[in-house]
Length: 210
Image (cartoon, rainbow, N blue to C red):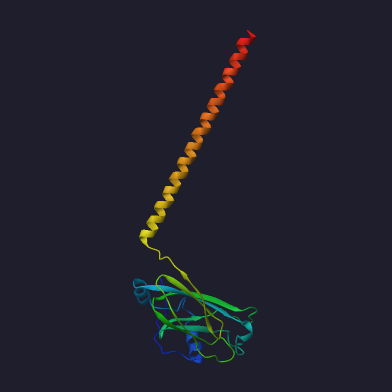
């Protein structure tokens, strides 16, 4: 179940975004309301996997006495899809890395990412592409630009598909059980035949001695 903080703002500047993210610190997620996401999922849709990888060398340093904080905001065709803080610390040794996965309409998309993580103010990062139904588009935000990393086909999970998977699994288990039973029967017959042969040989030896 999605938990979110209701937001209905025009596209914020870097300063406004910082203030907004601090206000969202008590929210586990800041994303599309569940009723909006459910509507998207009920229509032809695909998925966007957004990877954030910002070099530590460009991350802004917090002011003295203030906690380190920064975040991003994602818009698709002008609609605010995501406002979220990023895992930045006072002394970031490696790149700032994070990621998000969310549904989007299968359509021509104009994706915009704004961020206040860089020391120097950066323009909005934008990318336009077509998202096909049941596909996943990979995007990479490096703090300055938004890059496409490829598209993969996604098979939607359905109750019918789950039932088919369970039926196939049951059939395999039944087949394995029957195979094990057949192997056990063959081994039993082999042991019984060997025991009978040994018994006959013993009787022959006994009669010969007599």
